[in-house]
Amino acid sequence: QQQQQPSTYISPLANLNSPLVTCPICNSCYLMETPHDGIKCTNNNCTFQLDIAHEGLTLNHLQNQLAAIYEDHSRICPSGILKFRMEKRAGVSMLMAKSDACSFDVVVL
Image (cartoon, rainbow, N blue to C red; front, top):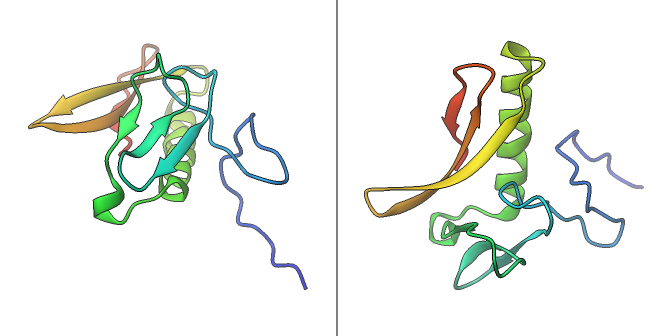
C-alpha cells in the first residue's frame, strides 16, 4: 500500500524519481544537501548556502518552511511576490523572505 504524501510545496524542477527544491535565490537551479556544506545551490554563481546540518535540519525541513512562508504571506498579501535573500546575523547565515507589496519580512531558516 502506498502512503499519501502530505501537501507540501512542490518545486517546479521536481520529478518523480528525485523530488527537488528550486533555489529561492536564483530560481534557476535546485538545492542539494551535503554532509559538510549543509544545503547549497547547484548553481556555482548563486549565493545560497545554509549550514544547518549540525542543527539536524534537512532539505525537507527547508521545503516545508518555504511552503509555510508562502502560505502565511498569501493570507495577508494575495498579490505580492516574495523575494528571497541571504543575510548574515551574528556570523550565522539565514534565508530571509520579503515582499515589496506589504511589510512582510521574515526569517525562513
